[in-house]
Length: 419
Image 1: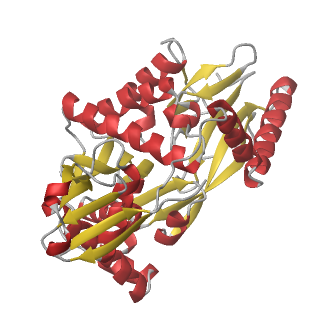
Image 2: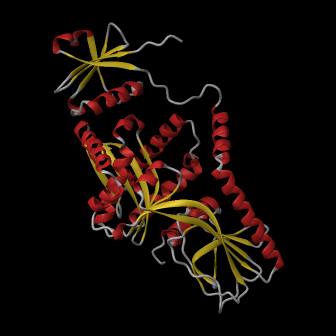
Image 3: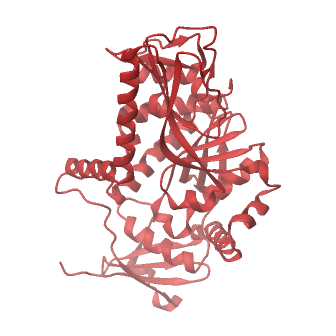
């Protein structure tokens, strides 16, 4: 329990700074492993971190300590894979478990190695596709996999986390969905928290680089031998290469090699979690309250009903639709998802390319987003090192491009669509 990253002084200090005006939290003798902040007017105490934790744990000592009297305690998002004690049945302290989410895990300790695990959950055809996607990614780009766990410089952290923000912004703009983490205050909190916890080994950043450019980033928590995947994103330019699956494969590989017993994908209705996980668990809010107080019983009853209603609205996608509607409304009529121009790409001979009538361009420059994605999609099917490919734009027709590579030369023409 002492390994819990969400009960560390660093976590509590940073969370209190951003969300409680740096006012101290409160600890109680009847419970250890968790501290609380008080509701403004009610005798209700909520765990420090609130909904920004991924699995608090606690121990009860209610038989000899009674400072729970006339109070209600809410501890959010506790996974069922943590074995926690319950209050004595003949005491005044009672517990309600309010189910909220289904989560997903890989029980790494049940398998000898990653290959055995892959064979247990995927058919040979799926395993082949994963390997092929990874091989093509590594054939086309200068790929490097880096896990920052225990040490990262301020300069390197800022560079990666700035890329993290931009990739999230790009991803959710394309999806036309709200991303709460992009709220400036919340992102500032994550930035300070991640840097601190990475350097004390209670968190990590996994980064897939193309050269020096991050194209996939995942932020994780470490709770003893439990690995918790918290926030992940990949560059949608590389969509064809299925970087999301490569990320999970590499994180599992790291986990098998570094003494992890349980890999937690956390909650969320995402297909990749269902495909990669070997088991599921329930994540619940725990309500501890003084049953001898009618006021506490009433408060606990209504808190339970409130979260049951939220779960119902979430299961019916009503909350998501509401947030997405607010997001689109806030963007205004001129805002929309990313627009993809279409391109026709065909291989051509050297004699068909005229360097004198074109100028070289850098594929990663602003303004070449749609071109870059179309080119990446092409090279997924026809792999060769893009670092050795030169790209040109015609001086005669701005809609025409070309590429000179080691294996193939390309004619690239933008498809003009009448509007």
